[in-house]
Image 1 (cartoon, helix red, strand yellow):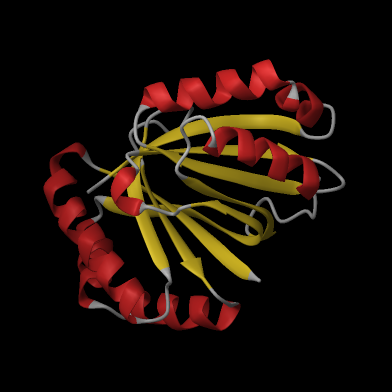
Image 2: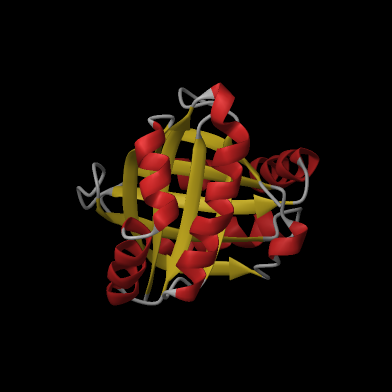
Length: 201
């Protein structure tokens, strides 16, 4: 079993360059202290447009603990806190139930994150949905249930898939609609929001 941590931050307009440098250092610290992968980007849609997000992957909760301790105690974290221009405003932790695709980070420029609710996580149907997406433009993805954070109610789930272009997003979701798997899935899961994150290099 693996876990994903999603952290969001607001950044002042005149602090963008410093924030980008800080994120690079956060990634290095994360990878050096237990994280198995880190994606960072800017939210492009929804009510949090323009804000930054970091998605970290871990093999277990102990790695999350070690990584967060290292990040919180780092000089760059102190610097961003004291600036007053880089402020964390949310973190959720997801227990991954499904990994799919090639996980080719170099190919991905966008991540589409979908939050939905269901009493049952419907892993079999989600797996079929993921297969259609990866056959029609998606590079990789993960699906899981929130276990820590504001949405840790036992029935809120997160589906994330990465893409090389927005055109690939359209192709993948058009294929899911045409195949009927999207309609089947929407009978089981109530979608609350779907957001696009533009990844940083």
